[in-house]
Image (cartoon, rainbow, N blue to C red; front, side, top):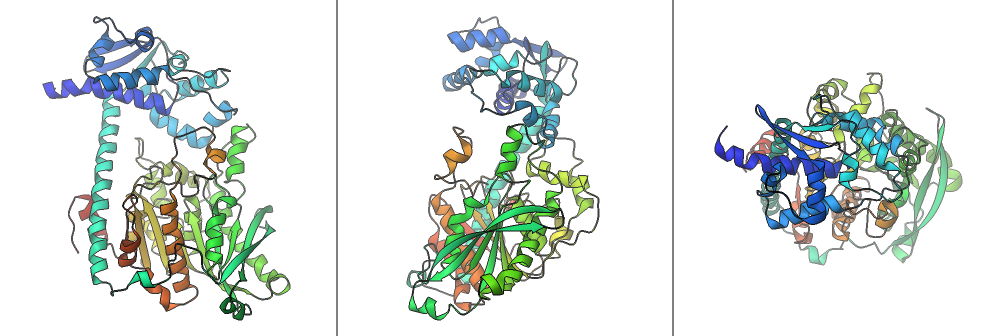
Length: 555
């Protein structure tokens, strides 16, 4: 082992320990053991506590070796981390930590944070979380560590460093690909027909022909006999031009929310699309919505999500369209064009939209991806792997009434794979975000885009945007409480989605060629904000993506 490696290894080890203690506020005993070759360093929790309280450490303590490698600012951050008292929400910790999704994650983490006997620490981590979960005054990390049901905590430094190395390399690759795609987008913009977008309607603001009215329906999904509510937004003409078209039928757009979300978070987007002459239906998907999350946290459900949701969600939308067809003449004056339907899907809703558009489940690819032994760089894989609990059949989920799909940060790469996505023949618009750590753009959306064979496809990459399109400054406090981990999506990013989804559906549902110029790189270049740069491309081959990952950009 070289001397440079010896210098940075202890610093990394302490960083890794802090990283995982932050992610999982439970690891504990009397000592933290860090194996180094044939030797080991033992850091006592007492020394950590004394340092947290007093800011001083005995030079003879092993902890002093680590602290000497940290800057004063890093030492201060470590003390604050150790002193911070966390107050958990009023939830059932036991139900939460025993949910299958979290169990799968903890098993991977347990390979790094081990018991004294070097066994997987997942069970010990769960026990620690349960022990501290009901503390009336909250807890500090040190208090949680002492609940670890083993005299020692062993940190698998080699595996931790390997994991961190992969994470850092992945972050660098993502940044490199972002720059490469921006160059490709610039090349496409230069080739586009010159358009003065300042003289064209600004699709980021509401249309001037219609306002909206809203009504709520209850739909029964006969596949599992579950009932769910749907908000219907109908165009109401507010101009002579709109009034002249009120006898015409309007294309229908369905919006499918993501995991642990609900239909109310898409009201703003629904109203925007309605203002441009679309009927918008936003169903609530029971079993994978915000209510399901609350049921889990209250101890009334066993998980965020059951595997049957992979089938129930697209079937919900098919049943919704069936009911709208029945009500079209009696309740909607035949104004719904139900043979010309678009679907918007966010996250898990993106998967829903893709299956309705013709994608099929790929159990072979999914099984391969779910067998990897180390922590995946793609957290959405924990969700996708739940589909392996379904019988591996050829499920018919496509709905021929769906003619175009617009998907935000979709979850799809393993459960659908190349073979499933290549079956889609309708227009597809994919959005991805550089700061999406749940469904990373490089692993989920960019690969998926190269697998699509449809002749009409678009990819938008938003810089500095996250996975959480549906969390805004208006609903953040209600959804997140006092949690500040998730940054609400900016109105700038949401304005991009309003404009691009309007142009996309006007082009492919309304068949209005006047909106086609908006669907190119020149338009995103025109509206791109320096705080949240956005790039659009219409062509990306697997070879180009590979080159971009390696820092090579070519036309």
